[in-house]
Length: 239
Image (cartoon, rainbow, N blue to C red; front, side, top):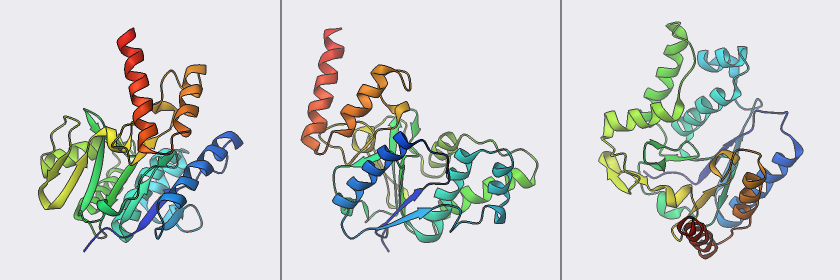
């Protein structure tokens, strides 16, 4: 079995401002350009019944769409397999070499695994456990709050003994973990770059932050990503 050529993304929030919507549209365009032959599956209220799952039903009652998205991405990967991409990811390279793993993850930094990109074969025990845990939180009245990235990292450590060192690792059951330079931050090794405001320089929506988002959005190749990295490194060295 292999990870199928399916890209899952989520858009439940119908109140998105036009500027962000335009940014996401540009990101998705890079997927279409770089990922020829991949099926794009958009998850929203038309193909996911929020009332049918205790966790998403509970999240909806308190208007926590961010938590709903965490459940849906696990649901999509468990049922169909494929690759989940955050809407604010630009793609630089094809994903074909990622498909031979049972699952793959990436570091956001040393301490935890990112939720911006995850790949898995269908019917994964990992995500079955994940979904069951979320629904049981509601049924046991423990509440629906959950640190998704923290739980994801904890489950990988408990089941597969991942080391939190931001280094590439091949775990048991053919599970691959990549350093942050592959999926999150610009480098010569970049396959994707996360251009979400919270992952860019400066406080979100500050002038510095907006300028860094624009710089990252202009990156189209690994060579440009490496040039960005070197410029940032030189600025830090100068300071």
